[in-house]
Length: 240
Image (cartoon, rainbow, N blue to C red):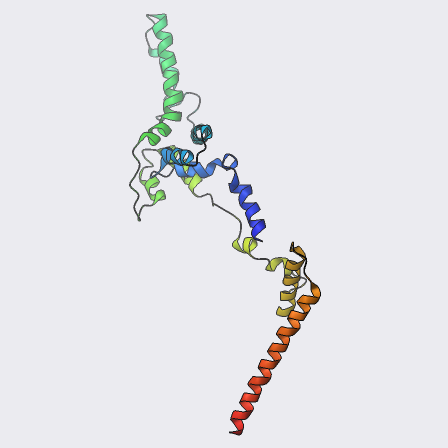
């Protein structure tokens, strides 16, 4: 069982480059840690050049999620947070064609970068919150939802993802493999023998059946002797 558990651990946690990025995004969305905390531990783990790439991947994943929420909320197609459109460039007087083209490009960058990316950059650039025992992440995002309206929605959706959906019994117990619906009336001694036999069959060392049977008989003999001695003691005490 321990070997199977170790294989499961290596599958999901062994290679850091194969981990789900949502694990690190959730840490970044914790105002006590943010991206600097993730980057710090990437470097502490001696990942070398991989640390820089992993940090970029985590940040890129967060930005892409935020842009997706912006698109779903109607921020795409040049619409800003106040609902204004980039068509306002028509009010700019056309005196210098070069200045006109530059102004259009600046407004495009303002809509495309400021609304979709600056909120993430602003959040990452802000100072981290002090870690205290009573700190509540969800409450923090609720209070700061006016400052980070869409980013708070991203945080709420990410932070509610369960870390694991594997039940503890299925991970640590083999009872379900022995006591299925067709064998749920087995006696405890029979179940114990089945589990022992399973362990013997899976063991790497060869088991001497004759020696094992002799040990079982010796244990049974000791139990009979102790039981007989206890009964004899009780009989003597009753006679006295």
